[in-house]
Amino acid sequence: MGTVLSVNLGAARPSAAADIGMTAIDKHPVDRPVRLRAPGPRTGGLGSGLEGDDICDRRHHGGDDQAVYAYAREDLDGWQAELGRDLSGGLFGENLTTSGIDVNGALIGERWQVGEHAVLEVSSPRIPCRTFADQMREQGWIKTFTQRALPGAYLRVVVPGEVREGDTVTVLHRPEHDVTVALTFRALTLEPELLPQLLAADALPEKIKDKARQRAARNKR
Image (cartoon, rainbow, N blue to C red):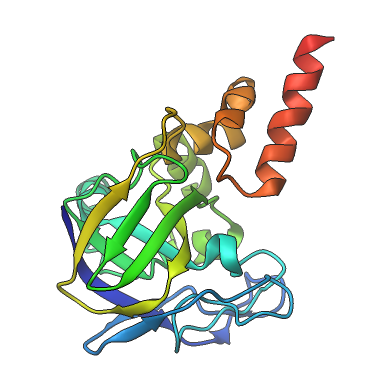
């Protein structure tokens, strides 16, 4: 069982690093309940799975498969020690800063109950981008983050409900495969030879499964 240490929301602001000139990556904890909802498709939907949270670049972010982004406080603490600076909850752009649950070791399709009612499903890892690098202001950040393979998890909203600081996170279901968030990240970045292994996880977004199928087909030639 884990805990939500903070629920973090972001407001749109100008950014020279973002393709569309705006970003909401800089998220901050709120001290009130926040409703989780399925935002619908990336284009034409509500954007974020959290009411009051902005999503600016809807070509690459938001939608049902990226409704909520979770990152573990334990991993933030490791980055703090490495970088020699304080890293507050929300700095990585995560909506939920958690404790006591292995976010990167979570299985694709794993389901969590958060608080009394909300149910989330692990869908995919976060892939670092230029906006994230600009947010961190660390030389070579994308390379460093990629090499560590501690990406945090995107989640779908299966059952809507409210979430707040201090809520428990309980794993309700773990699929019968071994495709973790971390393995999926490695396959999508530095170890594409792992891509065919991802096909065991039916809950992956279709775009990722397409990449895995294409790699598997090439391996059979």
